[in-house]
Amino acid sequence: MSPRLHPSAPGFASDLVQRVLDDALAHGSRIHAIAGLQGSGKSTLAAQVATLARGRGLHVAVLSIDDFYLGRRERQRLGRDVHPLLATRGPPGTHDLALACATLDALRQGQSVRLPRFDKLTDTRRPPSRWPLARAVDLVLFEGWFLKTPAQSPQALSAPINAVERDEDPDGRWRHYCNEALARDYPSLWSRLDRLLFLQPPGFETVPQWRWQQEQALQARVAAAPAPRAMNAAAVQRFVQLFERVSRQALLRLPDIAQWTLPMDDQRRPRTGQR
Image (tube, rainbow, N blue to C red; front, side):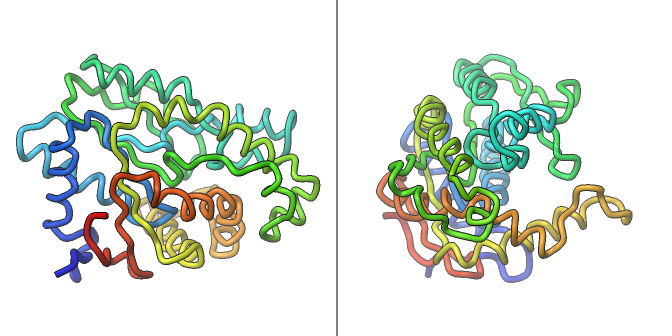
């Protein structure tokens, strides 16, 4: 039987979680990566694998590429100096890659290191005093929506692919900046990832729905008063368009890059086993 999401609780079935952990350990992964487009369940899967690993006596750290977003002030500076869309977190060019690489290197070497954390509702990184401390880690689970995705050719950027690109980036300056950052800056981070699992959605069309569900869950975890930066459905639809180009590139290229691609249906149910 194909592994499925548990029908009565959020998360993936225990047999899949066990396979992911066993795959990491069997291949000697110290930094095991899980990629998946927005709302695909990668954070949930990473947390479940970490829980299982800790139950086996392993010391585990869980990180997301989202933890390494540039702070709001830094992105606002990029928005002024380069393009207004760079003030929005997420696309290539909006991460602190030096911090990401240094953190992974320290974890690989067994050093004690504080793990950065980003607060999405306040849209800025938490102060270092609030970062958890990791010591002598055996396994790092690193998740993110575009891990190891390669850049596109410059020619592929000429035509806008959605309303945001057409209306807010008519000259292509923003998408060229993001693509150049992806080609130039991110391979150093990708090289630190030992093995990659790709949670493959049926298509980009499922992402807006998944991201809206993710936003609702995020808001439900905070106090009854709405957070100042919480998004409504229309805002989520626009937000997702900022990720569409690189997401489609991930869908195209990651099945040939990842060591394990797990196709999923539109309900996030894995459909097949290991490639």
